[in-house]
Image (cartoon, rainbow, N blue to C red; front, side, top):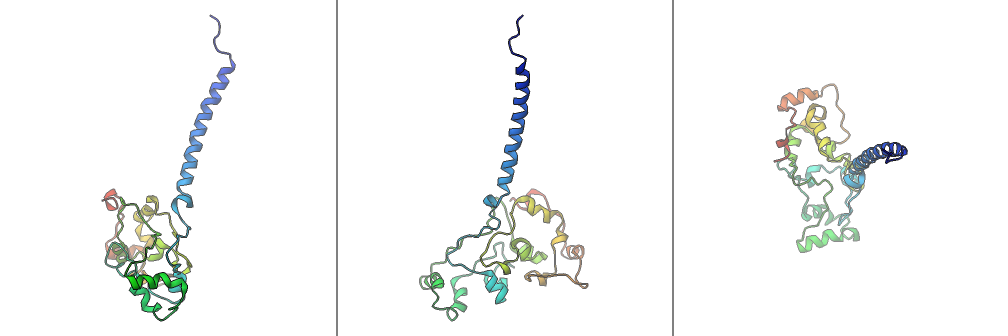
Length: 215
């Protein structure tokens, strides 16, 4: 029986198979890189806001405590955003005529809240409670980074599930005394309880079951 295919087809077939496998692997690699890139995670990307609020100035320079603006962070799941009244506590006197702060004054006059663009916005299927984490000794900068050094706010971490699990698997690594949760540039000293001791004090255990965050 005469040969139907030329012998070179064996080589072409092998190259095609290996090429297809390589293409699929490359596509998966590119997809994974895109998912973890700042384009998708928005890590380091400054969000446009109605007013260019500087945490570096208000927290780092002036020394305003996080809780002055985020007033429900110790009691509620949502940390809370400051009402215009809170802004005007200071800015009715300081920089009262600044053109940059006109949106704040307009909001105060009309009662229409400023439409802030959330920087740390979890998907609706993920549950996060600020109060629980704060009470257990997880510092603001653990998730939000050194906001006292951010002229404009951006996301420091990806907020991916894998990132959350790094803490949930070994919570003792990320704990500090409750009184130091809102402090930046904090370092433990000889009198500071260890993470293991803090975990035992608060009854904290590794929690990685799905229902912890997906309810």
